[in-house]
Image 1 (tube, rainbow, N blue to C red):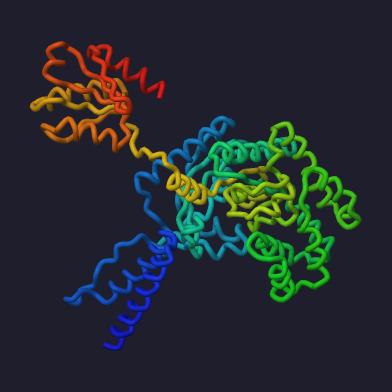
Image 2 (image 1 turned 30 degrees about the horizontal axis):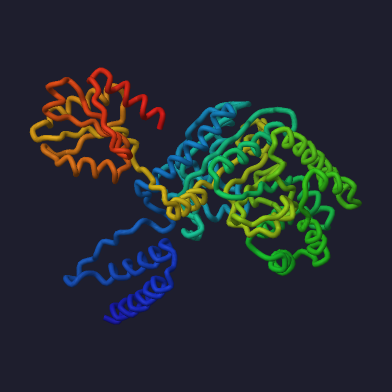
Length: 510
């Protein structure tokens, strides 16, 4: 009984949380999340007959997509895939789970977010965390030394989800990678060109592509007096600069990770630097960095990269940013991240990056030359560079834009509805729609024997169907079909033979 009272109290408290959020007009995702918790508590209580009630909700950190959301998602995927294909990529697919040992030790501090599956007697498996490690395993297993591939699939992270910011436990990644031995920075520059093309085409608002290099970071850490064994852990802390203030980052370095205050202050001077090719040239003259071989090779490559980016006409959005670290362990050279900045904030490309407010990373990637070698029995290396789009964040923004726009999102692609003006014409409608399907035209009929013409026309307006092919007794006698344009209400009679040609002509123009 006491447990029942506790649950009832919790229900009461949770109910107040939901009511407060509704009165404050909080976001739908936030309200849904709290309502789900309330339903869970009510289910624990059970119904009047003491039976356990079934909780209707998606698992934490996941979501359903309704037809409208799917239409937006398909539009995004089509844009992304068209760009990947334009750049000559082919596609592959890999299993949703891998052997646990394949994934272990590849993600640094993020390894704790890997979903392990229950041992079902045989193999220890984990759900894939990204598409890069499975790709490296695929290359090593099939002894592939060069490929340009894209892969679009779901990945899984046991993260603390924040649905409102587009952070999920199950989400899609869209990856593009170039594997093979090529001249420095040419494939890397193409990856950045692809990010620029896709984000420009999707019209998400203003964005910046930050670039840095792991070798510059490691050289900087060495020059600032960070012990070798602390490089990776300090790198993970620097990676938090987009979410935390420099004071908090410095505090974590010194108090939690045992770095000297002097070393932390030196790092602080470097990570505040942003610029372009000029900054790389300036740092090559820096008394501390110029002594470090690793940093110099990284800086020379960044300089080379900017010369290619000028030819690709993308330097307006790219900024060399020494605070960019990217926490994953497998990066070996160039790293980059695309960040959306709040729309409408003006400012010079480079200085603006500091002034404008970031709304989160939507793409990231870099060079990982050692990853394939970790899987190859003989340690053969295959140099790789790639980029991954965080498509859920992009969906979230596109959905918000669709909500605020007056344009209606179409959820089907039906081009023509086959309608009838009188009763008893079901057979004729079915014959005509069959002819249209055969001709590859997207068409439908209403599933009623004798629908009213008005309700058929209303269905077209609601669904955004542009054309109606109307059959009536007179039309059948004359061997014609009346084609009506829904938007203008204009009607023209066509012979059955000409109808298909006319529908194709009108829909190709639209």
